[in-house]
Length: 107
Image 1 (cartoon, rainbow, N blue to C red):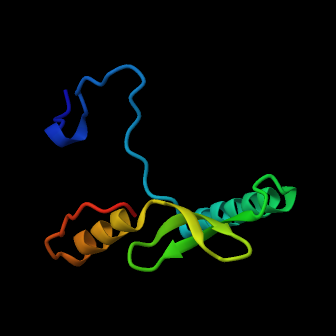
Image 2: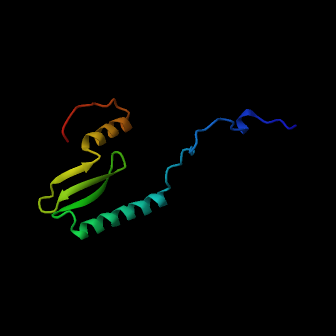
Image 3: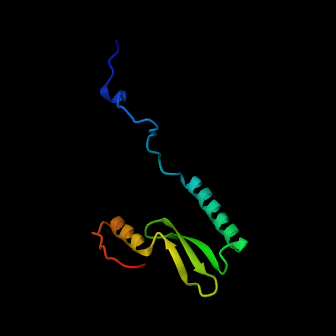
């Protein structure tokens, strides 16, 4: 019988429906996904469903995360932002290695 190292076999028990963690999307896949999101936002905005408001997607430079905003077309006021600015600030602080400052706010 050939010798088999312990690291060559995975004999762990996994729950039903388990799938191993997926690797992050490649830049090409991310580019396609971003184009699809932008096209979806354009379609919604063109439909007039949101009235005088529009959907705007931006990428936060500090966290490299997509941000969805609902903006008033006339005043450019941000009516809704997901994730909120406070969550982005925390993510930036965690990425920088600095201890996060958690304060409660309504933004």
